Image 1 (cartoon, one colour):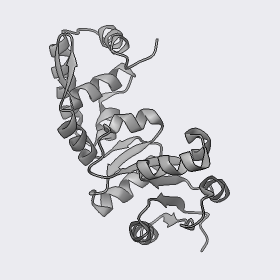
Image 2: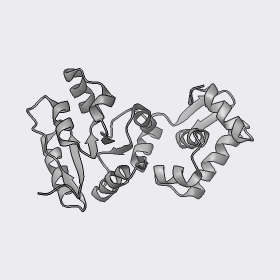
Image 3: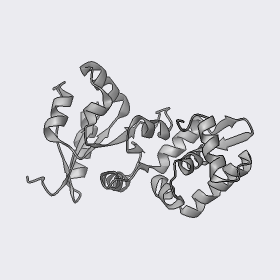
Length: 214
């Protein structure tokens, strides 16, 4: 098959049945093509470098173990590939942890097939995608963030941090698949709780709590 005009995708997971199922799904969708990596071969990095996938859909725990076994650095492993964290619903890490780690998207394994395919295409196009289910998991685990002048919900903190990073409401809304109006509401709630008035206030607060580096 000629893959030159397709988005080349590699799926990394310890469950070979899941990998086969996702590969079938990916190959059935335009313009995607699944690249197969032999399960028995431990030279994961060699395969990634040789096949040059555009997008890697990886179970984070599985990928961490593989990188440890091969003594590989995360960034050198991924190369130019875009990376989606394909998380178990029992995963305890907030979605933002993966974005900070270097992933370009976060979805859970409960996500519907069409949403996963859309996430792959969006990440390939350069977007950051956090599926709503991934946000819900994080909020169940850590529903509130303690701060000095109030409490922010997980979504309020996420929105405020990305405002501090300079993102527009529409961009943040696209990232977390919510309406711009809803994102604006989260921003408003956050700045009211923290008694912030200007963008400079928001940036200074983000620096003070370690969201941004000086």
